[in-house]
Amino acid sequence: MHIVDGALAVPVLAAGAAMTVAGVAWGLKRMDYDHLPQVGVLSAVFFIASYIHLPIGFSSVHLILNGLIGLALGWAAFPALLVALFLQAVFFGFGGFLVLGVNAVNIALPAVLVYYLCRHGISSPSPKIAATWGAIGGAGSIIITTIMVAFSLMLSGEAFLLAAKATFVAHIPVMIVEGFVTAAAVLLIRKVKPEFLGIDEERVYG
Amino acid sequence: MGKCAVEVTLCGERGLHQRTVSKQTGFLSMVGVFIATVFLLITQSAQAHNVIGGVYAIGSTVEGEVGFSNGDMAAEGTEVVISDAAGTELGREAIDSEGMFTYEASQRIDHYFSVNLSSGHLLDLILPADELPDSLPGGGATRAAKVSEAQVNFDGDQKALQALVEQAVAKQVKPLRKELAAYKEKAGFQDILGGIGYIFGLCGIGIWWRQRQREKGDASVS
Image (cartoon, chains in turn green, orange):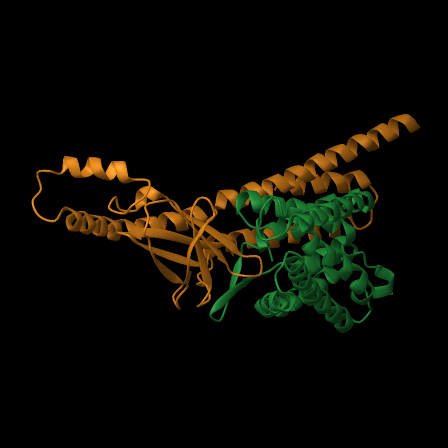
């Protein structure tokens, strides 16, 4: 998911940076500062999630978790993910500094989209429906991210269908795993700490 | 662990908040999951999904290896473009089924290898001129002359001997080089803790700043 320095054209980098600045500014403005510790913890979770490779058959995948982060944070996903991506570039050499903006948009924007798309679904009174929407959010955010990654590469000259196919196919296992993880996380958080997902308790338990 | 303390004081500040207790347990369980994940990291010795590779000269033959840091090698048939310092293309080689490629150097100059593995994965490798044998034409000609001057005591084919020595040394050094490259690529546990520390530190600054704003607000009200 991390595009490296040198792969993208300058206008794409500039557009990505501008969108990230706007997203982060909006996210910081909208953020409820009482939830700052949650933003930090989820940022840290994303920071290390990319580092843990889960073996799947002959290959391995790493979680991205932007769906879960989006569901929990909404627009605050932008600052949370930007900080984590920056630190990943510093410590692990993932991605790069010039492409930071593009990477942040490619990962954070799907998170925000999922927030608006599935927010209603995960607060459903029925746990089954909520888990389904959680899974849709988890897998959906990866799908949108792969499309955006392919789109960024296309704008820089790579053939869209080829890039999209390669990225999409490579991430099918991630989508499945993320779907399950996000659904499970939604179920757990609903029980343990419903306000974390901004769920109206009366609607769930009333 | 510092996080717990912060959360507790925040909850305490809210005073009569009804869900304080469950909030704390919820948060503690989250921290628990978080710590468990960190420990999982130590045992797994996982690696980054970066593109890694190396080029090694064995005599005038350049051997290269391209793959991903999770152990997958580059796809067969991926093209490696070889160019000189000025960007002039010297040749193209295809990667074989084991992620390796070989290139026969004809000049003793810096060689630049670039590989595009698609999906935004790029790799640039450089083989400095001084790793190539002196016998090749190019930048090192003067040095080559000096070497042969110093070796006047040897009988027999100087060039063949030199090539043999270079091959033998390259063979011995290759595993060390590979290990070194892998070591450089692997982020340590310190890096992980460092990153998490930065994130929590940023949060701390945010909370502190928020607290100041709130105190200012309270002061102006009263």
